[in-house]
View 1 (tube, one colour):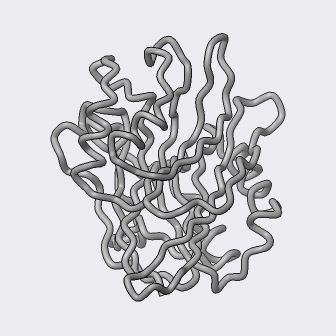
View 2 (view 1 turned 60 degrees about the vertical axis):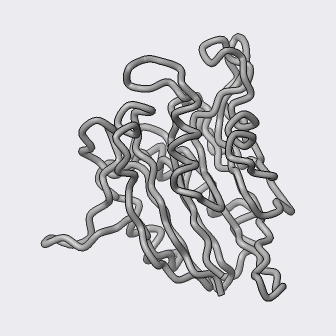
Length: 249
């Protein structure tokens, strides 16, 4: 069966025009018809986003029956973090704390999804939705904490697994770690004259860096990958969404 996955840092649904417009996020996602959506910077109960539960609003707007939220940052009023939206049942979920020392709180939300093929066969897909820190040393420590988590350690390399989100990895220095040490493939790499280069997603109006990445391993075959080309995506957030199609066997 085929699975379409998107990752998108929605910047609390506040666009580069400084307007809070969750309907733009919903429209973009709706147009791509994904099965699984990994969102970062998702508010709940925060005044800047009308105190809405953004994960719930976006899931409802897309008619998604399942979603899970991992709150990382608590504000004076409200909180925000990552959210995973799914057309498939979520059978397990946990937010993995990736906070390093006194740095800003960060996390990785793990969800176990249960897609069902038309034949009736049930699969299980492990998904990790993360948002890493701003310094390279912090990101390295966060990745170390992730791979030592019980959710990651219990997985066999043959199990279908997707790791996506906002890596803040400007120079793709974490690619070697995931690919060589943990047998992942990078869906968001494109071949360049000097080797792989990431699909550029930031800043949205004129992308210069590939911060939003998707890694995968196990019984998954990459069919296609591209960043969103809709004009509204240049305004809706400071990041562009990435869309991947996989065959799950």
